[in-house]
Image 1 (cartoon, one colour):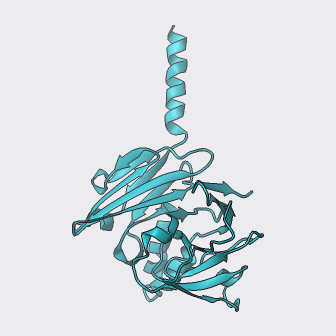
Image 2: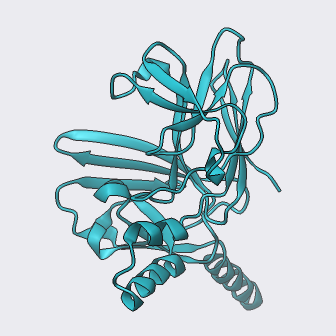
Image 3: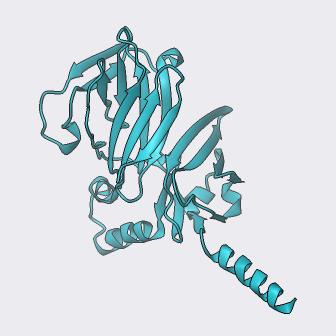
Length: 260
């Protein structure tokens, strides 16, 4: 009986050590008093008041972050899909433009602080851009009728997307790294209508402008008409993964696939 208890305790102890990642909330984010913030990661809900939490990343497939922010009686919701690295310490910090959030490894967080300490004259934009971890993505739209044209946007503040009008191989694209950005890629899959103005990209000066049927798009009226948004979510790639974003246009089912 004693041996069984010892074995059981060992199994429980081993389980508690494996499959964990620790998230610490940055001091700046802790002191945000003008907004109410809440995260749910793989079913665990917490707020900045918790200061730090232990989460259990999925060994295979994607982790899901549901984010909720209330400011001036307006509540925003966001869903971010990610592959949280296992057994590491992460930091939750403020995101782009002093808003939302970003999730980075402690190593990345400390590297940024050290580089700025060594050389305070460093340009923040250049420094942050050099530390972004974006990877590559590819869109696959299933069961899309020929009558509808989609723009799959993947570049955040720079409104660049891939126009998908016919069935063919579109290949990999690289999200653009721009100033005042965080590591979360805003993915919009929108149906083209009269409110969208677009222009084909016919030069490849930057890596993120290389690809088939890439366009720069703008919306006549902001915010985007919810009726034309087919899918909207965030994507956080820690290790420069290659991810296929597969969506069934008929059912709206979304599937994210790691490409080995």
